[in-house]
Amino acid sequence: MKHYDVIVAGLGAMGSASAYHLAARGRRVLGLERFAPRHAQASWHGDSRIIRELYFEHPLYVPLVQRAYALWAELERESGERLMTIGGGLMIGPREGMLIAGTLRSAAEHGLPAELLAPAEVHARFPAFQLGDDLVAVLDPRAGFLRPEACVDAHRSLAVRYGAELRYEEPALAWEPDGAGVRVRTARGACTADRLLLTAGAWTRDLLPGLDLALEVERQVVFWLDPPAGDGRYEPGRCPIYAWEHTSGYIGYGFPRLARGVKAALMHQGEAAAHPDGVRRTVDEAEVEPLRAALGTMLPGVAAAPVAGHAVCLFTNTPDTDFAVGFHPAHPQVLISSPCSGHGFKFASAIGELHADLLTGATPRFDLSPFRLDRLMR
Image 1 (cartoon, rainbow, N blue to C red):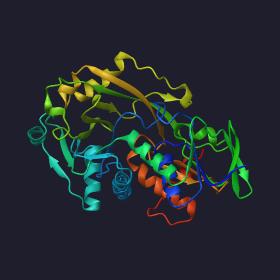
Image 2: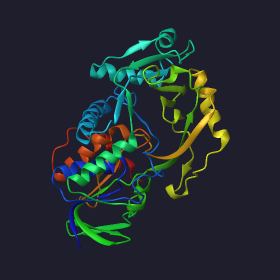
Image 3: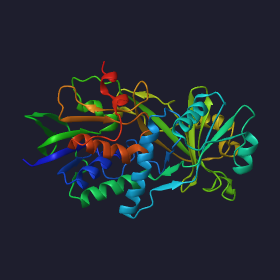
């Protein structure tokens, strides 16, 4: 039976980054993934993910995302792949709303530049946007987007280069303590390790029998809309990434025109699922209408455009939408991680580093107490 320093269960955004950081430190790593290398069943497909520095959710995320920026840039250099595009981002909403107030709070607490723009100023600089008089925007100059498939591929490829063994279409089915280590069972047999990292996304609860964590799977639908090809207002450089508070407490997000069109979606308005295997993967024609209505308040040209495509991905949500990272309360050789709730991908490079710190006894750069698991135990 082969023995490893660390087994990583789940090789999506967080697991692939963790395998890379662990292998780069010379650890013997086995990565187990339930799907083929490229698939559209989980949380990291779809061509683009936003990265932004002025984090409206809470200022505590700002140092973490700043580290993520640096590590994505390092990954670009090491892999030779273009992974990140920075072109600025607009945060749009009522002046006293959650999105604008939170964005300005993070900028103020961390001494970061944040330009508050009136509707006319937004339109003059970014002609596609037509904001109502009740809205304002904050320009985040370091916002942009990541190419998620390329990011995951880069982490995996480099992990293998450093000696990691990655197995696809072979999920971890169960695990048990084995002395101070663990024994993990797959369809091919069993293997052992000193440590186990659970980064299984929406399937995390399957690997935690007897531990009831408040993690809810949500179906998230994204759309690609197709404004006229000759309309250059939506091209990168003229159209930044954006998020907007379309209803009090609810946001949508979108991108400039990329290969498949102008991608946009509404956050946290999807169907809850009892289990990820039961998520509805089909998309009805009428499902785009709430997005069109919300886009119509600021991007009427996108709101009226035909649908070029759509996709279903999975959110794994905590009740407070903050991340969950911590060791199993009964088995300290097992690290459980769900940096999730629909806003995690941008952090993957830094979360992978944090996992490697925790699993090798190094001191993490960041205080992880806000992400402790005990707040989720039922």
